[in-house]
Image (cartoon, rainbow, N blue to C red; front, side, top):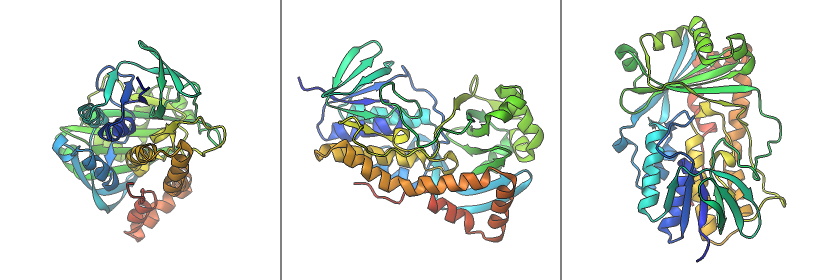
Length: 371
């Protein structure tokens, strides 16, 4: 029997690609390390571009209970700048969204295996994967969709070392008054040495994500509770939002040294037949809300490239053209906003020019269309 196309990772990009390939009649094996639906570190904002891809796959965020978002607030201490988004977005947990995408892939004919992590890739013809619980599996092609986690044998090579940043994500149930105040908005809080994002998702949940320099975490005692107490002492807006809030997760998810700004470049050293999807292709700063649209776009472009019989290198060049601009713009905004002078400038610009936030949103959004 012909070796299947193997998708390593059944999250957003992997499940979307699997569905597209299976609909085209290809034999597809999806290897998802989690045995059941699980949360993922993500801002969980679905932009207009992401919505188009999801609807094409038969996944409707609104039908899944997503919270509609039409405005953005930029917050620095007790100062707030607010603007309308140039589109209506949605907030939806990755636990819910990823599961819906896996189900559509399975319905299209993909073989979705849960609880099986890919631990190693040996690149040749074919690519051979070592898989927990399944042994060695040959792949006609590998769609690498392991998100922010690298696969041994196919690690990303950033142009520069990742910054010393630590990320956290936690779902909470806000007090009724704060849930109402947050409704319809995504809030981006400029912090000393980092930033945070807060928005509602489905049900009574709100998603809090934050990114801080590790030295601040160390000063706060090195753990989540100390950092949260430090933030509540220094950030009046966050303190108000979380007053009376109840954590809905036993502990926050965390991640260290995400290579924001990474953009894979096709080279002669690339393994043939390996298509890098989502964060394995490029990593955009999370405050932009463009990560999910890039993941879904990569799935669509990779599937179309493979189905057309074109090599992975052509796909990587295509994606680099499509996402390079937004990633570079996001990195420039991050560098501007990580220090006190830059944060003050961003707040002044936002207050004096209401269109500034919308312009920043457009600069970091994906403009390329689906193939």
